[in-house]
Amino acid sequence: MTWYLAGYGLLFCLLSAILLLPGAVVAVVAFGRSELRELRPLVTVSLGPAVWMVSIFGLAATGQLRPVAVLVLTLLWVAATLAYWSRLGLAEGLVRTKSALAAQSLLRPAVVALLLAPCFIIAASPEVAWDAGTYHLTLPKLFVAHRGFRAVPMNVYSNWPLNTELLFAGAMVVKDYILATMLHFGFGVLCLYAIHTLCRVFHRPTSAWLAMALFLTNHVVLWEMTIAYIDLAYAFFFVAAFIFALWVIDNRPNRKAALLLCGTSCGILAGTKLSGIMGVVVIAALLALRLPWRDPGGRWAELRSLLVRFALPVLLLASPWLVKSAWYTGNPVYPFMYEWFGGPDWSPVLSEQLAAWQRSIGMGRTVIDYLLLPIRVILMRDVGYARFDGWICRWWILLIPMTLVFGRRTPLVRRCLGAAGLYFVLWSVSSQQMRFLIPILPLLAVGAAVAIDDRIEAMRRHHLRKLVASCCLAAAFLTAAGVNAGHFVIAARFLRRLHNEGGAVRQTAVPPAYRFINHNLPPNARILCLNTNQGFFLDREYLADSFFEASQIADWLRPAAGKSQVMDRLAERGITHVLIEHEDWGIAYPPSLLEVLSDPGLARPVHRSADARFDVLELAHRQGE
Image (cartoon, rainbow, N blue to C red; front, side, top):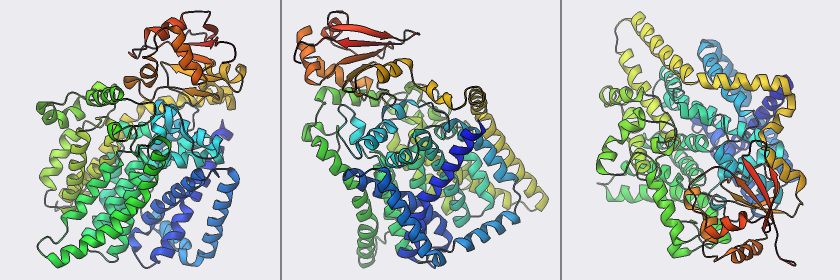
């Protein structure tokens, strides 16, 4: 058990250092040590992953995503770090960090570390979350095996922006998918650092720890730190872009460099997922508000600066994903705008079904529903799409109005709430899933913490200020601990399993039916997955739906009239076996397919899992097919 966790912990630290090396070098070469001194660490931790995302994209696009190529890039960055060592100021940074830690109590960092410990342990477990098994981890696995990008039939997600998944692919080259999962945990830590930076630079350090604690009171945040999704990476780059934008808005020194960094962060954001455009719109709106609209000369100068230093980096960093999608599907935003661009394995019916499903998420789309949405998302959240599929802290029902009342005169609070409010509006007309709100939780936490800290500072008595501040911080940490209680239980359960089973615990994550397929079916077998799209543990080629609510398999087979035409279509795709999970997702498979599956002469059962959850069938194609 000790070696398992220690090994992954060491690899996680090593991988984190490797990811940050390019950021340190590029920050010095591009901006110089004297520029943006207060934001230098943030520049490093934002540019480092960004450089690796771009580098791995290049390797994948050229078919060179191999361990030796990643090793060569790593060695080059190590060499660059050594060459610029004297200019990096790393030794000075370590001295300043040591002095800062010595000057303050270690209690607050220790509490944060304790809260994050179960999340780290769970992230080291071999279980794979749902969307990770569908694409967040599955696609990087396929890209690594193929040494680059490849078409993944019927997997819509394979044609979307996948910046974070490229880092997961890098982690898999180094070790495996567990290290990739821990990488997403690392982005959660970076979110905390970004919150601390935002408070320290634009307010006071005293509000930073309260803001971090408030961020950790949200169950959806702690849950995401245990799995290989991408929302914490999205949140980090969104907050980083917000910080750089504030630097520009406040007309601080080297604002041109800050604007370029803001555009770079937004470009990475747009390349993280399709909805990254929402974050870009929010940051662009913040920057546009500061344009000198009454001064035509100044307005056009500022607009040119925005286009060159903000819009151009966004375009350069996001457009390769659109080009990649167009290369594989003919549609740069596949499967959207199907009527204009078309695309494989899609249809107008599927577009309607997908849109209807997205509209069904949440508690309604009428005017009344939108008016009640801020209250419902806080008080009526729960598991399942009907209740936003996640939890945030109920305290927000009081904290947000309080922040509006007491912090409305503070520029930082107004900007945090304004950006969060605009993002919430965009979220409300899109897919109302709770985890898609994670990017604004740092801004809400900072706004609330700053408003509270200002009220405390207004108190006359020093001892009273100290007491109230300690009580607020303790209340936030205790709330976070209560929210995290379930993760402590899950982590303890995993540690017991790890103690009893050792490294063999990894095999328990693989369903027996998948082990049967991997060990008993020929390498050229191709699987049709019904009622499941969890393909990460499959070591054979397969077809699966991207969305059960808009089933591509059902749409593809629906025109087939009779069993023979179904078999012909399956043969055209090279399908040799069928994996069925006995879970009713409401997919309307055509009757002719069900007839094939119930005919032993056409689909012979070869395996049933002990719990009767899965069946594996072998198809009997005609001779020569």
